[in-house]
Length: 559
Image (cartoon, rainbow, N blue to C red):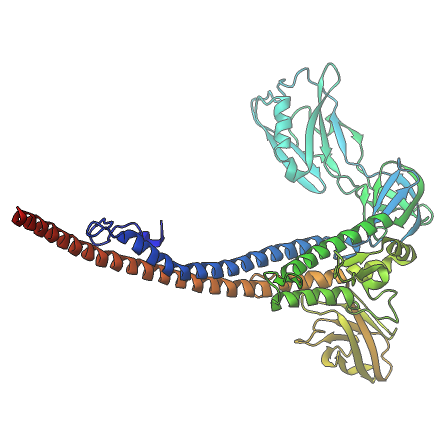
């Protein structure tokens, strides 16, 4: 049925149905045809509106793909995450190890003297059943112990069984750190207490305040003493000294290595770069970036043969996004220096852009895995740095050193550093050509607020009088650049896609208003036409009746 029921043959003012009753003319068809002519403008608006809706859908899909890319890149935006390494032990019965990207390749000797252990104690008195009563005094008793310096007192009610004691202790074990259980020797059940933490500091001692008979200090025997793990790395410490830790999983002895102690023993750990894994990571990086590039190409392409343009061909927002992605993947890394960094761009690592016109991958990234494998074998750390460095800083002089930055405030880059020393104290300083604050006594220089160098902290080691100029490099890898740029591009409020989506929604809404206005006009027109033709049909009916009457009268005259 047409818009507004305009062709139903029903007048909105009186439910009039007509189809040429007066003179054989089909007024309903006439009205329907007139309405259909007017509806052509609505169809034009609807087609126009659908075009903008299709553009919105394309933007939404592109935004989703870019968010997917950012999520994938966030998983490798640090050297630790990017640079996969392996650690193998010659004695896995004594020790196993895992390595992250910060671990240095090489061989480390180890010697495990003892494992970290927790305290375990068992009662000397047994009970024939778990339901045997352990407190038959007729009054509440106490079971008190000290664990890791904290005293815990458990109230044991009159008539309590061995099972009740276990349940009472375990009710608070998550906070007290002490767990109870029973051991059955085939005849009797014995209460076992154990500390949940290993290490020499986590002792467990039954207190003299215990009043529960059979569970005092003299009623327990120690089956395992708590102790620290003891080991040596590369023969250190010397003599009878050891590295001591409270657990058997140790990650703070060798940078980047996590050691899992299994038993006493000795051997070596070999750390090396997992080249295949890193190549796979870079391959995934290329694939994810190319998905966005391919979508951009599909949405903006133009077929010169068919003269057909894609739905977003010529769109400035997509042109901007494509340009940004190209610049990041092709340009030198932010803060990198060709004189001091082995690699400053992705092109030297086997990555390139397909420049072959007509190629299925034209404009997309390509990876030569053989080249990447070779550079990884040569200097894996430098490869990881150009991909995933996160504010990796240094200077070109031993006189001044990079100290720290403020995340979210300091921007990566290459900055000049100038300062003057007089009387052994800094009297003026600038970073990146902008005034910097400084501490005369400590030699610390900090980038001033409001600049890219804000929060950048340097420490001057040479305070001999004079004026000095140096360079500080604060590096950010390509992955981090992309993550930051994608965050801006996909921002739900200020990102270009969000702005364009908002604009297109406004356009679509305005078109809908035109459609609504047209529908209202057509419905009004149809109503007027029905009323007009209803009156005409009525008049023609009257004339037809008069004609019939006259014809009848004339016939009578003939008779």
